[in-house]
Length: 376
Ligand code: B12
Ligand code: SF4
Ligand code: SF4
Image (cartoon, rainbow, N blue to C red; front, side, top):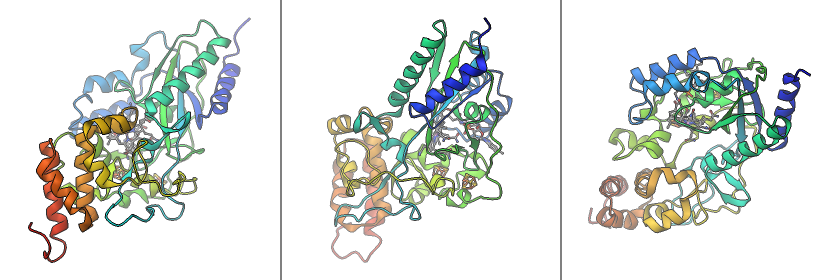
């Protein structure tokens, strides 16, 4: 008897939704020409500089997964939701800081809970487990199915697959926006050996809205949908190694890891329920928090950093990366009570990049008011 592929596809999507995915759809594995052109253009214009793994070869391969995996007949696109940090109507409101403990920001995706208790977790682990569970369900229906999952993989283009499967549309901030959870979703795709028919593309779009464009403090959104990663705070605070270019430092504000500003500006996101602040927790003892204590982030040693962030997204920045970011954020926060901590880092941090960032921050903060009680 012929298999009802459409029926199986619909049951798979339903099962994904039942298991907590915000959206699911199916795309064909034909080459993605437009995504290929956009990727190559980003490279040619130097917008991906600093991410040496993003090569033309990868763009070619990641936009033709069917060519690389000839057994694949369809691609299941999945979006996992997470809660934003901001309060509705007051996107950047932070809880009141204790005197002498200025708070910064960490992007909401980094604060994603593991789903087992409230412990934070690296989303690659969370989504990986969820994909495996879904494939196990599919295997119960079709035991011979072959599957390969991709989550933030260097050799895949998650947004383009999700867009093709119609689980959302590409916003002017370049983010994939779903109906169910706005752009606060993390993406995965699973190549399948089954000829599941594609789901239709989304008919939605940004329309006349352009609220995200002026919300970007560094001007990283060059034109609608086109990001200059070299200016993006997300790149600078997560991927970039070495000193952050001086002219960009004042524009980073108090972001210690990632940036959500172009998502917080989006009216589609503003109706979503924020992460409960749990009484205004600021300490990173249990992992990333939306409004972290910046002095704490500056002063963690390697062991404390490992203990707190080993299995979270913040691990990617490294101890020195987070301390560098915290120093710059403290420089921008302008709170003089952080000067002793900044001077300690300037004089004693084992990493030269952190010492230099702390020195810059001391000059910013000390220079802000008449210098009476400082030797700098
Ligand atoms: C490299 C990378 C980055 C780089 C470069 C980002 C970029 N825009 O290219 C940096 C470090 C800056 C970055 C930042 C962020 N990232 Co990132 N990143 C990636 C990665 C690894 C590859 C992206 C890529 O191939 N870029 C090249 C360009 C050409 O591709 P693209 O942006 O995916 O292209 C889409 C849009 O730009 C749009 N587009 C491009 N050109 C044009 C032109 C027009 C006219 C229009 C209308 C649209 C349009 O269409 C494309 C297809 O949908 C993916 C994971 C993956 N393997 O796909 C995650 C990924 C894109 N990142 C993700 C996230 C969450 C973020 C941040 C929100 C993190 C944060 N809070 O700090 C920010 C958002 C910044 C932003 N506004 O884009 C998610 C996106 C989730 C979503 N809802 O879209 C992904 C998919 C990871 C995941 N698996 O969930 N990221
Ligand atoms: S993540 Fe921040 S810096 Fe990057 S494009 Fe969006 S607003 Fe600009
Ligand atoms: S803010 Fe407006 S223009 Fe930007 S992504 Fe959201 S809907 Fe689109």
